[in-house]
Length: 244
Length: 254
Image (cartoon, rainbow over all chains, first blue to last red; front, side, top):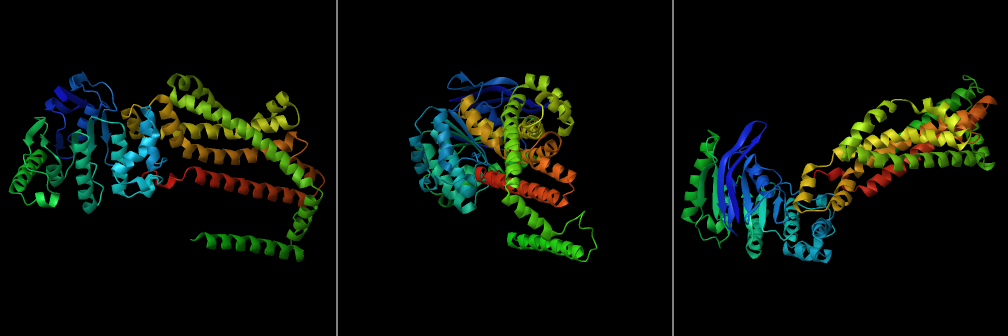
């Protein structure tokens, strides 16, 4: 699905990635974790096509990524809804961009249970509602890959668990491949099939961990699984090492 | 402070000034010929309303400022867009426009009279010049303020250039453009009065200069008050329009 070959990326002579190689298969949910400033968002932007690698290549279904595409949608922490458009108009924009009927926008708002907020502007929505509209907008472009850049960071913890569970259902329903960036280990363990911890400057990937837990349970129930604390400790130590 | 209190304090300040002024005039402390008392000014104001002179001059000024400002708007906004979105146009045109920008509108008056004669022409030209640069820079600043992240979102969804322009660039620059229109209109309103003093046979500026020649300081003051009140009213109209069109402006950081 996504194949990264010997990727290097530099900003102002600072090397972010030296020689990153990674394979992600279809419908896999991958979380990228690392200390702040390590290049997690940069990696998402490289996969989306918003940034071009200094050297190396990224392939999406065997096609080299050279520009952004509606097939790979990035959702940022601050959701980036257009403040001058209502929730519905934000989704209409995507449908118009793809020459689809804007009548479908209500269907996408329904998916995130926000049909009754269609005429509200982003400033009239709560943090969780904004993020839901952001997800609905992303789904409207019929993507194959969702790139989530700390999408739950600014949401109230109680609502956050609810939204994470909802998004996870949608991701499975739409058969999406997901790259998630987060600082929250619990969130990552619940959400992902695989967690990639970026290393410090000497190596691009510190560890690539398969999360082989049964995740049909809720976040709270999953926490009681003994594997959960094992993974949590392992990731915590890797992140701590990355700071040294 | 709440609006109601600010409004009441404003009214009180005006009333106190008028009262002191009237009192000083009543006691003959100020020269009534140089500074007529408020009651005389109010009397002259109603007299000028009754003989329709004030309405005639006010509508002349409004017509000129409206036309000049409209011309500035339809020329400055497209040029601002062109300069912001096209580097070559910016390199060619901006140095010239930047050179013309500090020239005060009134300095264009002799040329404006030579080009357009006496009447509406020079005043309309001056009002256009007065607001042109404010609207131009406001448009350019509005475009420079557009969030790259929003443009990236449009790129991710493969929005066409036209859709991006119509749905992102125009609304994102709107708050700055409307602010510059508000400022520009104020500058045009000030310029039209100056222009009418020199080259017109109607308008509030003309009324004031004729009143000065006939030593009617009461008419001069009525003219000045009308200019001020109309300026404030039009500014409020622009402010209301901005608030109506840009309902997200206080929340654009979400």
